[in-house]
Amino acid sequence: MIAGDPQFQLKLADSDVDLRAAQRLRYAVFVEELGGSGALVDHAQRLERDRFDPVCDHLLLIDTRRAADDRTVGVYRLMRAGQAAEAGQFYSEDEYDLDPLRRSGRRLLELGRSCLHADYRGGTAMYELWNGLAAYVAEHGIELLFGVASFHGTDVDALAQPLSFLHHRHLAPPELRVRARPGHFQRMDMIPEDRIDRRAAMKAAPALIKAYLRLGGFVGEGAFVDRAFNTTDVCLVMDTARLNPRQRSLYSRGTSA
Image 1 (cartoon, helix red, strand yellow):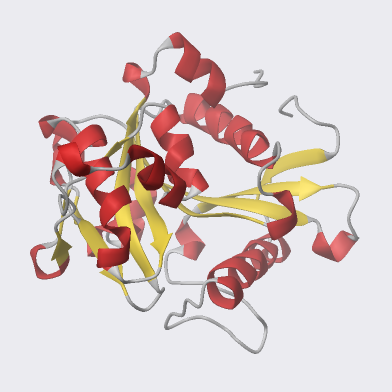
Image 2 (tube, rainbow, N blue to C red; image 1 turned 180 degrees about the vertical axis):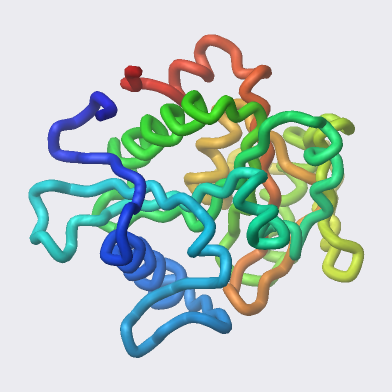
């Protein structure tokens, strides 16, 4: 058990009931709130799901004070290289060329479908999820974490400030620099670096992206416009070996063996 706020419990989904709870929360956030869709989305049962779900691990954050059938308030979908092999690919390989990560020879973990119930944003819930993620990373010896993170909407001109800021200030080093697929590549250096309004750029960036930047995360080259999910995606990469002590403490705050 991971130490933290006694209000919360962390667990990996170990039943169909747990998986459906994760998919219901994802439906509320990605479909109802953000207007996304997908081939396997079940609108009748209000489940956001896809073909990768059966092979992944699903980290659940549970609020023990809520009703028994409504306790899952945060989720992370986790896919290690062996699980990706079972699925035939990582989820984000539809959007990004991951060859630089694969060639690294290091242990990979793809993070996906991260979301929080609307009532739990801006508080300690994300740190609680990170506690669970840090324990998972330690257990499996993960060295590189990556995954797509999304801006709401598909109007890239409206996102020129934050996309340009990410490109100029937080581009991954060449050996880890994944790149958006050629057929969908959207350049991110839309504004010269000396014309970026840093305050406006950071204000426009989603909280999750800002959190990964504080942890020392990088972005790949190019964005991907996902019209099915009504998002503009960037690929975030985090190298656990590059975390300084302060970043490591933020990432693993409150964890214990």
